[in-house]
Amino acid sequence: MDIGFTEILFILGLALFLFGPKKLPQVAREWGRTIHRIKREIESHFR
Image (tube, rainbow, N blue to C red; front, side):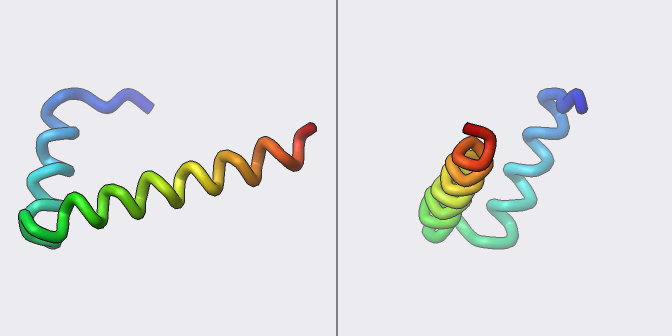
């Protein structure tokens, strides 16, 4: 899957619209933590 600059801007704009500028950093942090947990869980099953 190839995501270009325009698509990234669209996604960021949509997230800003949905969550607002004050809550967006918190939401991004939670998404990052969730992705990290999923990666760690997947890696632990293939060791």
